[in-house]
Length: 398
Image (tube, rainbow, N blue to C red):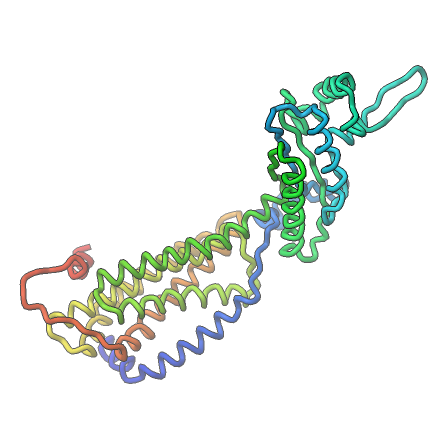
């Protein structure tokens, strides 16, 4: 039956290739709907009791999304005129951060004290560049003894201080709001470094952390994924010893990844930290199907079979192993849906879809393409056996 199927694939090879290209283009077009959800709430299900309680708290009071500037003067002394001037300047500028609703620092801390019958509330530090040493010493003692500042906005040794900005995200376009804030904050940090070169500036906070996930994903797409493709192509080129097989494998893994990500976009999935690794996993898993087919195909041609006969024989030998491997791999990733973290559900579903597509392409598109591409393999005339040729025997033993 597999032999008849193999002959059918070869007979309709041009139709299969054309249909595959059309279907992949249609499926991959769904990637335009993909967006990266940088909200940490995606790691919890909607009915998670901790998340429900947390959101009730935020609805009652306010959200705690924040950006924290950490200022570390190189001389290790926060309470100097120059450093306090920098803190005061940045405190004022921080109000320009998009969606900011509160700015807290040691300079604008509302210090309360009594004078006879009067209760006085005022900023702890004003006009920092004109402060005397006695005023700075007094402000330092107050800051280090104030529970709302010590170990929060000022270190116990007074060598590092922070400026905390609370932001209220509208939540209408999360994929744009967070990058907008981070872009503004980074520009502001660069201004601080240029204006006060004696200061080291670091950024942290919930908004910065949320933005790190899409940035890491984009970094992987621009560096890690191309490197993986290059390594895979080099290894395939060396082991398969032919351009046709390497090129066909590249198409299979590329089509599998693009189609799986596009289908995820069509069903409304949003990418997050865990699910953004799906392309790398699909790339890795899709290679195996193609290699099994191509190694057997190459071995059969070295034994004297014609190219089309070798394709049919390779399908006969590898169809069931490839199917079972793909099935068990897909089921393994689908089992991630039983977990409590939604992004891992998406990861499992995307990878399972990619594995299924890779299987279909490996038994349709790949043999059809190999029937068209030129394949040059010298007949085996010696007893020398290459490492890749042993794979068929090893797989049979396993």
